[in-house]
Each structure stands twice: as structure tokens, then as C-alpha cells.
Image (cartoon, rainbow, N blue to C red; front, side):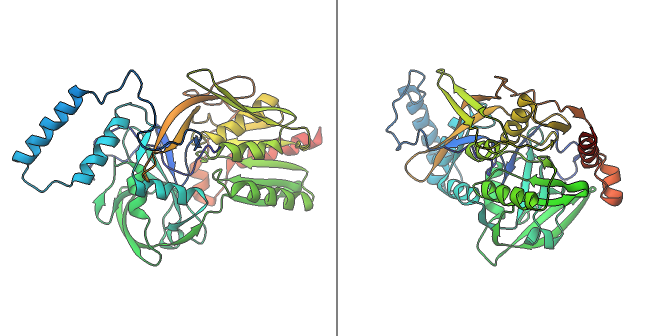
Length: 413
């Protein structure tokens, strides 16, 4: 079972922002990541179309069918242009899910679902950038352009606003649709219009096969290991193990795990990694509306035996919060940064049998101490705002410096 971060969340319906409106506050109310992104499970309730039983709240009644027929008659009689029947059908399906009012429940067309499955493996054909969308404004921003990617080579930068794709404004559009427009065939290009410091910049970006590097690592001063996890993908478990073992072989005496701007990932992935960090016991559990509870536990075989710091911020969400919450509950490390995002619900990806799929919120997850952080987030042990001005000047990272200071202090005690 997977809780997947490698796809976008569906945002609430919003009106598009015109190019003349303010682009301030882009990260306020952040919901999701595109190529990185949310918390959910795949396949447990997979079913063919029409095979599931219909509950007492069924909306496809004779009354609804009659009204749909009336609307169709109006379209046939008066609509000026030619109707695209398939688009209308897909719109009906999307509308049923959108009307739930849940920003995490989404209907995926076959193309969108194929894109999801492709991106979750850690390899896809695109430009090599992570995207996030503001829940309130619908504004889409660049979180990261991966090293060596076409996005990086074209000059895309963190916090750039993705305003247009192939000259079509995408602000407020469903993130899955925007991702599909950015992706494409190998060796083709996509025209992007981004907004940076209130200035519109146009660029042609190549599309290549991208292998997402989800883990970066290096040895810092005083044998402090540093591991950055950008998302929890299928490939992340092996990448983390390789990074950890490499640092350990170099004489690592303490460790910093950087989860800042990590919007989530696979539940089984983060559980596997935490199994090598935590003592024996509960990692995380989730419960559905019927009280069904599923638990993930760590065994006694592995446990980190060196001082640990975890860096978090307001964009650390979902699986990142599972990691941070477990570390905090067990008291085996220090959280430094700002309060995490607060996404404590799990989605089920349901294959509808015709190539399409539906992602629906099915349960809440709880930290080892039974805390549901949905809507509240996790408070760090050491609250410290990121000094962006210093970083712009000389790439000085005050939160990372604090982590190093804390670990150096723990060695001296």
C-alpha cells in the first residue's frame, strides 16, 4: 500500500488571477505538490466501473437523470458550437467529485492517471521541476528545478510563478491538468511564461526523460551528516539507505535530515525509512470512518544511535509530517524550523476499471502518541524563521547553521 506524494492535489474551485493582480502571498494556504505531493494509498479498494454498490446517498436518481436529459436537450437545440461529448462526460465525473468540497478528492481522466503512475516511479518525461499551488489564489509556483534538468538549464528558479503554458494562462487550473500540459514527448519543447519580481519572462524549455533525485547528501563539519529528502517516492528508500550508509562509512557522528519544502510521499516509503530510525514500536496509524485501523510499526533490528536534527517548515507536509511527528513523539531528535503544513488525512486511489481513477479522502493518520495533526501541523522544538535575505546574499542558511550548532553542542555534553 502506498501513500503517494508524487502527484498533485486538487485545489478548490477558484477564479483565475489576471496578469495585473498581485502575486504576493503565493505560499499562503499551500495545498500540494505536482511531481511531489500528497498523502494517500493506492489500490486497496480498486474496483471495476459500476461494480461497487450504491449507498443510500446516491445522487444518480431518476430526478437527476431527467434534469440531465433536459440540459442535453437545451444544448442540442441552442448551443452554438459543436459539443464535445467526451469532454462533457468527463466534466460530469469531475463535477461529482469536486462537489464534495474536499481539496484532496479528485477524479482523474485516463491521461491524468497515466501521468500519475508514471511520475510516482520517479521517472517521467518532462522538464524536471517541482510545482506547488496556492489553495486560495490558484497560483502555481516552482518549488525546485532539479540539478541537470532542462528546467534548471533554462533558468527556472524557486518561487518563480508559472503563469502561462504555451501562452495559455494556468492560474487557478487543476494542477493535474497543468502538469499534463508541461509534460510531453521526449525532445519536444514547451513554452512557459513565468513571473519573477513582478516581471513576465518567456522561455522555451526542452522535455527530457527525468529521473527524480529525491535524496541529496554531504558530510558537513565535525562529521555531521546531512541528508535532504525532497519527496518520498518509490526510489527514495534505496536512495536514503545509500546516502546514510555512505555517510556512516565516512565516520558520521550525527545527522541532519532536511524535510523543508517536502510536500509528502509514499506511506510505505516513509515507514520503511523510519524503521531504520525509530526504536521498536508504532510508526504511524490511520483510521477510516468505520473505525478500521491500519498500523505501521518499527522492529527492534534498527535504530539510529547518533544525535539527530530534523529541519521542517510550512511546506513540510503529509509523509514529511509522519517522519517529523514520529521523531518528536519518540524524543530521539530535535525539530528545527517553523510549524509544518498540517495535512493529516489519507487518500485512496481507486482504479475505476476504464483507465480513469478517483482519489478520495478515506482516513486520518495519527502519530505514535495518537495525535492527528490535520489542520494544526507540528510545532518544532526550536522555532526559527528562515532568513531569506541572508540566503539571497550569500546562500547563508540560518536554520541549517542552527542545526549544526545544536549537534555540536550535543557532542560537547
